[in-house]
Length: 387
Image (cartoon, rainbow, N blue to C red):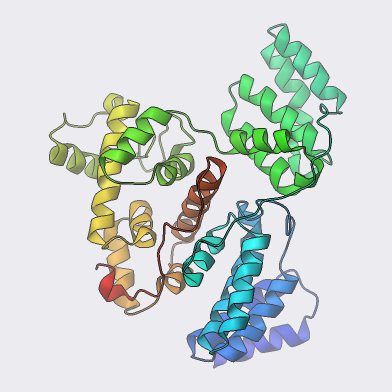
């Protein structure tokens, strides 16, 4: 009650405040957890209208972390309506979420709540394709052609400092292609993602396709598909996980000592190698794509088995460790998994689960399949989800 009173006072006294959308969501969440879904829906709906919507109705909106507040508020407004017995209003909300943020984590939840493979439409204007207009791009291209890599990067530096302020999606896409040639894969993906999320109507159909493929590439495709097939996993899930974990860098190393494409730690790698009858892991072995993918997919499959097929719980355990996830399940018995994610104490793990599922959804759509079939129905209590 004290938290509820504080939030309501804050919302009354600060009708215009940068934290107001967050306050509205927290007020809705407090009502929802106290069993008042009707009141919660009103707060969530208001939060949805006031949350940032930088790429609101643009094709593919929702794979950018900054778009999570709006998608999250729409989802929980719909969820609360459903719990309040207003199924028609809830379905309309879920469909609105799928239209505005079709590749987001919350769209995957909406698909699961709807219980059907609702068609995904990513449309936009398709003007004639033209090259970037920023003169710095031309100079960078010429420098790269002459083999002057540092000079090319120097020309691109002002654009890279503030990519969100660039007005032209074509300039961003042209810069992304140059950066890819310069070996700056992560920055190229970032620029391509901004281009397609924030400037989609400006881009032609072929430009949008290039941008999506730059933002969500498929290195090691044969190895990833083989590893996924060996353990009955979706290759799009693996691509999304590897993109998040290592950015497809073979020998990426985290501060915690995780190594390789799937960022395996020593104990997890050792357990997987022993189970598979493979040589014990060393740093050099973990930097080998085939070896790392074999161990990583085995580890992920074990987590999925432990949590009886729950992708949400398996991903949370992949990031934080099953010990933490099991503790959280004990503290939140019977919670639906969508609510469970919102209450994960570690921000890194909450973000990780959302990001991997969102990337999986993007890969699924970009490479020719229908998203919305990976999570299954989410009305699962934890007694059926492991722990």
